[in-house]
Image (tube, rainbow, N blue to C red; front, side):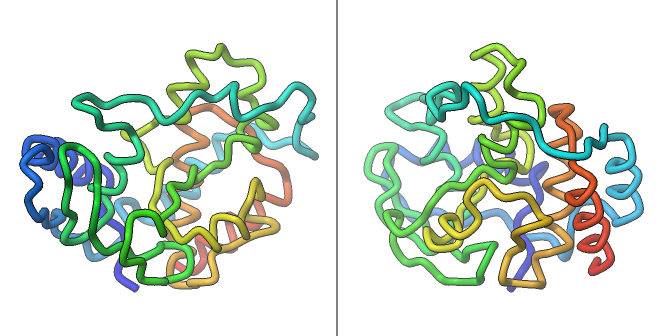
Length: 214
């Protein structure tokens, strides 16, 4: 499957799409890149900056409600709409709501032909973030994390792959689409670095192995 649109281009595409969203027109995505936005060496160096722990932290006190999402992005749009527009092809809107389009699930390569068949997944799951540092954040910080459109944290995928992944890290779950492993590892690392989250020993080993596929 083709690589996902890199996020520096995706942010610009989102802004353009927002201008035409209320006209109900068919929208084409920005051209995709020919590969990941970083090389594997850079990602490996970033991975080495993360704090490594023997085991993940406690789930005590966790709930999804402590990560408020999906927040408004204006004109009756929310973050889910923004990701659907960014990651889809031939997207059509009614007002600001996405009503049609085609999405290729990054995790398993499935082609999804309706927005209600698409899940918006958090690359680093909310529960994983809680165990690796977010339990100490304020609610405002957790809201920023759960709605982060500036980093590779939100992604359109099939519901079945999202359910399969759950809150697992790369040591226990990887995309069935093996061609996505390199970018998946790079994106996971980028999010953890941005938000200063920890990784477990097994998680780091799995990420290093996945970078080997780049």
